[in-house]
Amino acid sequence: MTPVDDSTEPVVAASPQVLAGLDHWRTLDIKHQPTWPDPTAAQAASAQIATFPPLVFAGEIDQLRDRLAKAARGEAFLLQGGDCAETFAGATADQIRSRVKTLLQMAVVLTYGASMPVVKMGRMAGQFAKPRSSDVEARGEVTLPAYRGDIVNGYDFTPESREPDAARLVQGYHTAASTLNLVRAFTQGGFASLKEVHSWNRGFASNPANARYEGLAREIDRAIRFMEAAGADFDELRRVEFYTGHEGLLMDYERPLTRIDSRNGTPVATSAHFLWIGERTRDLDGAHVDYFSRIRNPIGVKLGPSTTPQAMEALIDKLDPEREPGRLTFITRMGAGKIRDVLPGLLEHVKTLDANPLWVTDPMHGNGVTTPTGYKTRRFDDIVDEVKGFFESHRAVGTHPGGIHVELTGDDVTECLGGSEHIDEASLATRYESLCDPRLNHMQSLELAFLVAEELSATTR
Ligand SMILES: O=C[C@H](O)[C@H](O)COP(=O)(O)O
Ligand SMILES: C=C(OP(=O)(O)O)C(=O)O
Ligand SMILES: [Mn+2]
Image (cartoon, rainbow, N blue to C red; front, side):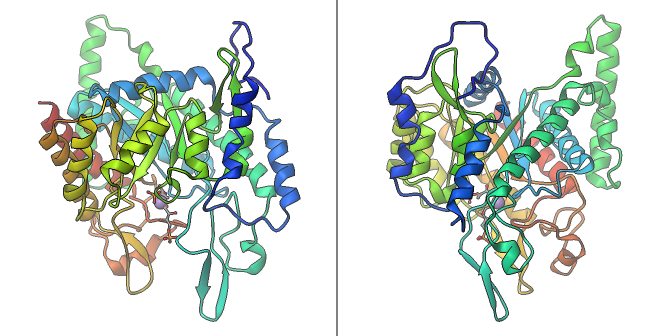
């Protein structure tokens, strides 16, 4: 396997046991994988990906682990956001730029509002594979395989498009690489400098959240001018750390991108800095948990409302046996009506263990509803309510609310109901573009950031 770092330290090979362990998941029960019509083509695609360079590097992954350890201690806050399902066609400069700008704006609102360092992470450059409730989708008389994300099959409702196509695995890698390239350019090349805080707001339709943001940007500008006059060097702030993460679902993609860190002989996933296990694939004895237990990256696990304290403890034991700071993040997605009943019990139980996971709220996935006209949507009020329940639970138990994980886009889509634009059921049809779950639009994302900043500063005060 190609090494994953550029260190000049001696190369440490992985032991035969470690290498064999990386394929142990193949012997276990596995869910939500496509049935490739041509398994040989899928094997060939995986073998080809195994020869491609890693997308991220071990040193960056180590750095992220440190940052997440700080967030778990209450000294930083994680912001994770992006599409439910990235598409190949959506990997355009405009769309990537507007998602990055939205995340930078949200991060500034959080940093300034709560005086807290924000770890920025896109659900980007690899969020291509989707678990689905049903293997098939029926429209009228016609039933076809469900859309499982662009890395598996096409969204068009035809038998040809819905057939899984292994060539998409390779296209997924290249799309991730070009997305990441642009994200790195935006975040390292000066565009993400705090001096650009106003320009991130440009190009978005004016609305109340933007106006509130402008006010904050003016304050930041004044503070920068003052600090510069006082001799501070803001060139240091030209670059921001920006990490990538996605659900580590599709093993024919993840396994060939798993490489050995030659500084220490340990395996790392190099498809992204951070991977998480979804709510539907977190079985303790299943393939995904086994694979994740063997990679060194910081990892997440989604926890839905049925999670028991015992199930959570077993996940900690299996995925973070060394209790390593920053290793394990729990992303709770309980639903607004359930979070206050379920989360406090999990938090209380963690306090009795010697573990310190990072707690992040995903206020999206427990709050899905389908309209009579068939749109999958979420109410902004429910999303806000779950976020509030998350902060309340942590305040009550005395643990750290460490981050937020949202499905969003920088575009003015109409996918989630409510927000101060009052998107209603009738307007969903105006601009519903998601191929899977409904995302917050630019304005709803900013509104949510202001709300989280208030909650966070109330918690840290
Ligand atoms: O993003 C999460 C899941 O893939 C998604 O919610 C599944 O949606 P479905 O219930 O329409 O299959
Ligand atoms: C599949 C997802 O979520 P969950 O595993 O929480 O259902 C997702 O994050 O898109
Ligand atoms: Mn989703």
